[in-house]
Length: 112
Image (cartoon, rainbow, N blue to C red; front, side, top):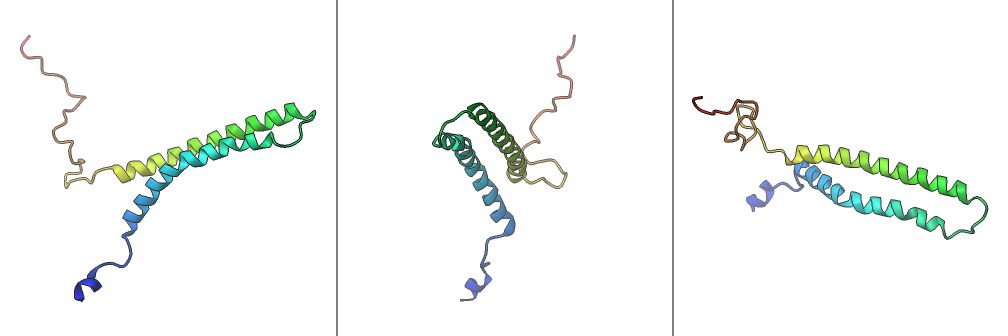
């Protein structure tokens, strides 16, 4: 029985937040598609002489949704980059970069 009391009751905060950011990245395109389809519902109303005005409203709406989706994707991308980055070792370099050559170093062409 003492083993059950030692286990945490809830998930760690960092792991929980990482999963929610990944979930948000999956939901954003579906949410965006739904928002971009809303102007289709506007066609269900009566048509009249205000068609040019309604066309302009649709353009502004679609541009606004597009801008919000780009901003949301940028924020989620930044958060996902933080989630996906490997932990750094004691020297401060990320793990796995030790074998990668320095692109700024001059290539060794040998004797000329």
